[in-house]
View (cartoon, one colour):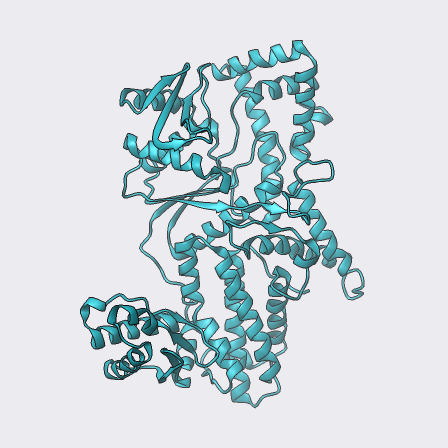
Length: 579
């Protein structure tokens, strides 16, 4: 179902061809909402340079051409300013389109030609606690995955956890020392950092322990049966911890999506052999490296992609190359999406360039780096604890939930259980929305007081808007539900008109997010929708209106609730029963 702006895009393109010839086909109609009409096109300004005419004269020609090609659904098209085209839809057309939307289970979200899209996100480390740095890649990645799912793509979630390497010798030996049933071993499920730091202290302070740890790494890399058993226990306990975090954040990652570094152990030697045999990789100072044209460090010297270390070990580059090959060759990827920190940009580009040279990444498979910025503290520096450590993700969530619970403490109508449930839903939504509502490649300041507010562009504001509509519908006359499905929609004032236009634009916004990987665009649309519903509610009596108008406005309210709930679902945000 095309949105109003998409309908106008087709009309403007047809008018451009009619007025100025087929060679002008495909000109950007530059459509946007307007305070003076339902929509405005600025394309005459763009055409002026090529046509060497005044934009206003071009706009006049386009207005005539639009009338010639037909203006179904458009009540008027007027020129204004230096060369703008202002469009106003007919009330009847808007009404009919909203009725159509109300009967569409997809709410106008288009079904696309499905592609297989592996998406790499979250990627915590085994035996280490998830910190605030994991928040954005997890939240943004999950929203993008949900959106691509909704559009009909075959999304393959890839949680590339750090579950292999030299630290595991140290961790395995420490687990053996403290005992699998000890309280300290239980920290792997509750406070992994404490377990890791205790193992590190033993490694740094006890030479005998350090020697055992190094020997254990050799056994692990040799796939010793007993060492692998203990390693699997470490990984299993960490999975319990990851899943606890994911359940609390309501993200869609499961154990089936785990694709850790260990997954590719059997491929790494072959990766190196193929690159060396093809002349893509060469030995430099004992390490096998790929030197790519134009890739230099700050000192101007060639910057290598090291795929095998001088000691024979493998690093991130080797594993990342194996993931590319696997995702294209075995998963059948049509495009690759990586939701990873901005600082990893050069590394990813070098991996992809090497994979293309090796033939593992065809030109037909595009790669996308969804660059993730940092979460900052009030000092506009990376958010850290007073001791300088990274902020634990769970403690950050606890703080937001506690703030909401405190705000609800004056509500005598709520039981303790209801208060806790609302606090959890609203607090988690506050954190997620604060992250998703800003461009993913920019940094943002973590302000807990602002993000839990029920006013402004916040998650709780959207939740409150949805719960208010739900309450409104619940208080409608008992026989109203039977009448809603067949009732017409009446557009009788400007607040209704603005709200209907928002609702009809939802599907195209979701499609745009699927192309641009920018959840903040969806956040902006939902916030505008909630604001416009608030104005509609204030200016357009609903339950007090006459029966025909009441049914119409109730239907608009129901569709608004459906769209808000759907859109928030793509953000991974739930709507509580009450607030």
